[in-house]
Image (cartoon, rainbow, N blue to C red; front, side, top):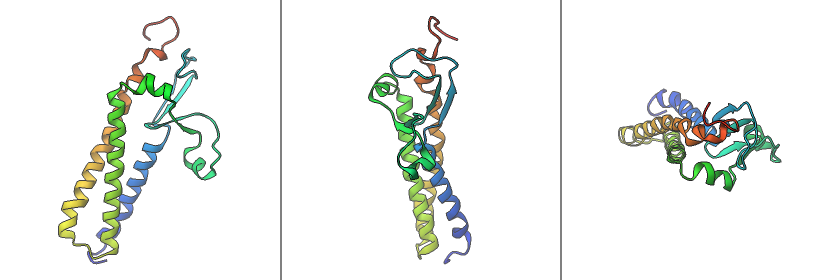
Length: 167
């Protein structure tokens, strides 16, 4: 290592953070709710809800055994679900955009960290110019993904028992 052991110590940590970021964004269990009753609507009609930013838990076994190890039962949202719950919800869209930003910044930081380990990359230029901004962008975008918990779907009347206006 040209710069000592420091890059070799941080590269695995940044890599782990990048993979965990990708896994959380691509998963289908960002929000888990036991509704307690079966909603009577066309978009969702089960008593439990497991939602992710891009996928939901369908409970159906997947045919790809490698994907099933990590994301078994995850399916993309249906067009009807997207129209009813996601289309006009800016918070959901912002959380999705933040997931993309976090993934891009995390991948950039990971590649830069490993380039510090494996090549004679000039640290005085790439550390403050690429690595730190990428890490800060990934950090802030990861925190912003929690805006998903304030989406309109969590406050939608579809989750109320039939015949009531609120809980």
